[in-house]
Length: 241
Image (cartoon, rainbow, N blue to C red; front, side, top):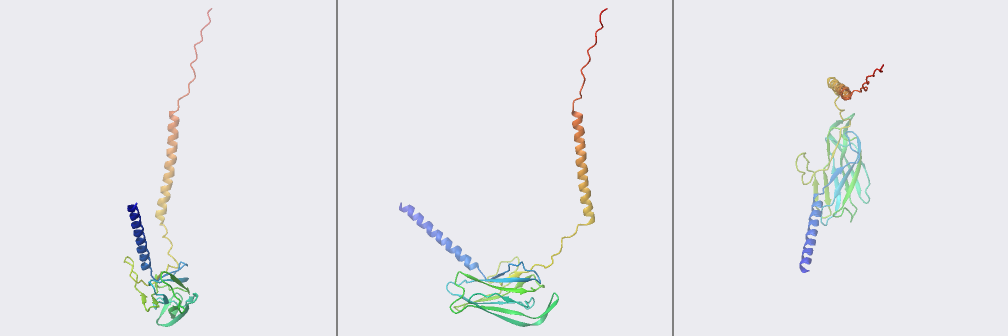
């Protein structure tokens, strides 16, 4: 009995240790990210949501700042309130105006900073979402990159500003980014006349071949049927005189 208890105790310890490692890896893999529920397109309107997890063991996240591009700028941003947090939007004058669609942008959103109330903030193991709405997303880029700065109440500061390169491993502190789809995707290429004609002739040939096969099978079946014959007449005997 003691051996069985020892094995069971060892299994429980190993299971708990494995769960702890897996949970720790999940927390360590978390990072500040951006997403949108609106399938954002170039030049379109969308809501952008920043998800901020707290990765410290004991410290609270008390401030989050998101910076915006000067070459693919946002001309406006509506900030969704977060209970207890204050938000401050900072505008900037672009050193070089940016032409997008039918307008030229000279002033844009430089950054938005969210600050937690005294004694509050994002606690370890939890996350908070901060949302903005934008009218007229940039139309001169496929990726809207928005570096973020996360500040903890113990003085730690994490810069989420490393670029993510396709085909390469994700960096340790990737900058939040949002993929923008084309507003007017190119229609599928039209089939050439020769291709259409070839398809039509091919279909017609198949139909003719099927009909010919049907007629051939019909003739073969008819030729195999037995020919009906009438019974031979018995010769009539002449009556004796």
